Length: 515
View 1 (cartoon, helix red, strand yellow):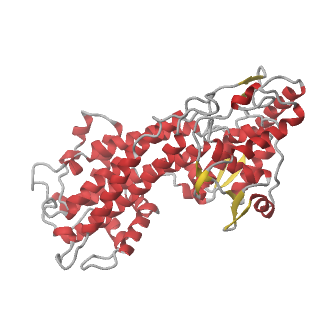
View 2 (cartoon, one colour; view 1 turned 180 degrees about the horizontal axis):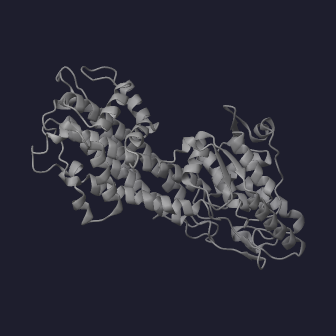
View 3 (tube, one colour; view 1 turned 30 degrees about the horizontal axis):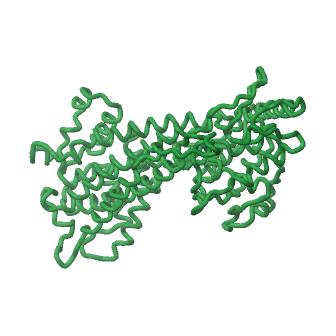
């Protein structure tokens, strides 16, 4: 059964049970958020320990000391609140274009969920305010560049916090206004921060994880679409099905490989066109024959990253951590983004490969020496018409750009804070690059979809039942390309189809066990 984020209407956070689908539901579809009573109690008890530490004048990093290299400087109780607000004011140094609203909403949700675990010493009412910002659609304006991803996403998270203290900018009711005004209009109180609260709010991996989580969900959808669209290209190219025989994949039992082979057989089942084509040649080119191996390896990569993200979104990533059993305040390194940085670099490579092999299939569709009899560039009237010639150019350009973006960010490190923070993850850069790769990959798949549908119509013959439904869905928006027209509109429509979930839902309905 497929859990579609758009069908999730409400989410209860407790710090332990958040799923990727729930985050997407909140980030993109406006699902409402509430806090579990158990989480509220855990946060209260954690806050009481902070108060006790201050009253007893204990030395504890970030509570009664400065930060980073300034941890050697003691801060008195009377200045502890100023210390926390100064942290936000001095750290909101991100630059560049603002993050999209879904990434911002993801950040708010993930930060709130982490604080709900009760190891951070923050007042519950501040976490309630973060949740109110989600439910009332107050979205802080957060520039997307400037995080090292080591002591958490300090710069972008500081911008996220500014409206909470009545500062910064926020989008509300479609307009960007001052953060304080947005909170006032939405009826959400603002706060002066107290001891430990600034650190609790910005010391964590929620920026990189939000961006990367959305990219991972999109990669999963893109991988499913890649199987679907590739199987339609197989119809147009009169491909052989023997490479998808389960026996082939039983002797090399990678999970993703077997899954993709099974998907392809289900999608092409009962295709008179393909059934009549199985004796035409001995084997197909790799872009068809190796679909299970290539798409399957990408599926395994996505599954690995998915697992790592679901650990991260239910983890505590600030510092120091408060443990109530013995009142320990431990300064550790859970804020370091390396687990996500490596994962998002891996994910970007996998998404890039989905686009790589898709573009190769498109080349076979438009190239008359490779298409097994289709007209050049999929136009019935070549010469005066260029057909889909330049669509392949554009797909090739996107694939080439992906190869540049797929260079890992996590192998880089620049020391900061007077070498106190001497190894950094660059995880937010990895996440941002990955998101760009995935977006390009959707566009490459859109080009292949256009070409596959055109190729099917030019080929003639009856395709599988599920392909007939998909073909009809595409033809509602993209007509047969019998002569050159303003193809820009077709490309916009194809891009919408691969992103809006309609094609996936057709397949889920026709093949309930499609994965």
